[in-house]
Length: 113
Length: 114
Image (cartoon, rainbow over all chains, first blue to last red):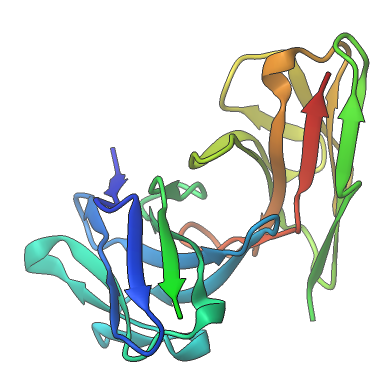
């Protein structure tokens, strides 16, 4: 069975600082990996996805993520955080014959001015 | 382009009352459809999913039910709401292109049970 771990429940950064949100997955084959962002009271928006190929994936809003098979990780990064990036971030893994991705518990990003 | 509409945005209901939440998708055919619940400060719990009209799979046994009367319409219902049904309900769709497709979410319904 596939699983996702987001070790950090909360992350606090200062505006303009760099950001890395951690995601570790468990899956037997090459996974499909996703990062979503959820602003308060809103639905989830897809930031980026990895299916195959280049292990560094570019997404919307200046985010990128790197797939590291050896570490079973898919960490999300942004070089300079803006106050509007404050939100909940979810990592998800899918694959095999299932239409249903498995979501992590989420990481809440707090941005200090 | 594809869009997903979910309503109402907010709902306050008394315990024991019925529930009907509706979700529609535009701009695609035969989407996979999903209902999730998100409790305060917690992750997503998959409630139901559907790969076609009349085909509903339930992930969690409870007093909720789902129906898909039309290709791009997904309805979440309950005959008698419980206090524990409070939460944020999200509808999502994904392309019917096989496993591993990303999901696209509606704006959610905030359900409060009094």
